[in-house]
Image (cartoon, rainbow over all chains, first blue to last red; front, side):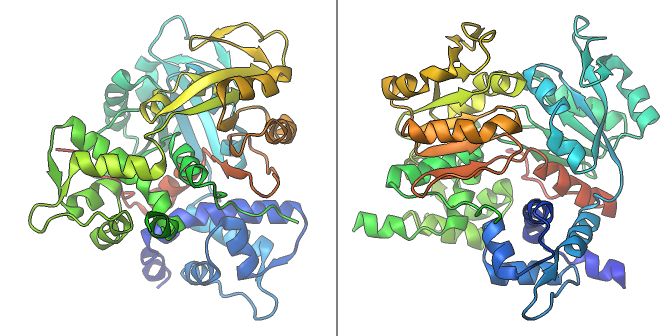
Length: 221
Length: 221
């Protein structure tokens, strides 16, 4: 029954859950105990009816005149996103971006533990980064088995990205996040998402060329 | 009249335009002359009715049985996003992330020209990065005036981010993209967007914990 309910969460709702989570973390840090759908909507940059609809898929309806309990909603969304469990990730390609990702506090704050860093360049192997020694890419199968790696993050230059994706798949990794500016293909059953760092810039220029202010989540008060 | 039409583009449509643009660039590289709304929907990861509705705000309706002309649609979306003009950007905070952003090919490919790199750390000043010498943060007002900087990118550690935002605002920059894991406030009339590098990871774990495959744009064929 529970599984029945969970399977129906629409893709667009899934994509908004991390935005709610981020807003709720800020609210929780400000020690605010409850939040209205209107306030959460404002913080997350969506409309209130959508917030209520999205949260109803999680079985959360709030209390009229009070809103949602912040801590409980945080837990519900974290659980729904799978963030209440440990997700060991590997980062492949320890150039500047790989370094930055290895040190990115936003990963550990959400339960993503960087288990290993790998690079194909022998001159990088052994280098200490974020408390780990960089390992050779050839050790990927052992690293994946050893740490039960769930997610591979590709931070290599574009030309190397497909080969790295192939190696991750061969090592049994089922989820890949690609930061390289390259179009990759993976077999059925493997999830691939791409981060394009220029998308938010494009949204800014849309508004700036009009002399309008881009919509932004309001600060937590 | 033109302005009248442009002002009505909904926020959610604006946020999808960069996804269409990315898909169209891939299609154009594959020398495909026309594209159906169904195919574009598949590539961008949205539904076809939404694609048609979104593009209708741009005055693009396609031709029945043929679809949209790829090159023309590319131009239309680029123009709508303001990408047919030059957008000089500055990056502040030249640590690993700043280095990675300075070298990120996705920016220049979309018309974002990195005009200057700045850092508050005197030991970084003068360092050559991506063909530029890092300048001291104190020179921000001159840099902004000199290059007519439109957008400031904050890549500092979290504790420094608000001060850098204040300095960008004081220097007259109207659009700010924040990569620091910090909640910033800016005055009315200034656009602020935040990049959270962990969001895509959260979407991956949602599907992985269910044993499902995350939705992904199909490769261009």
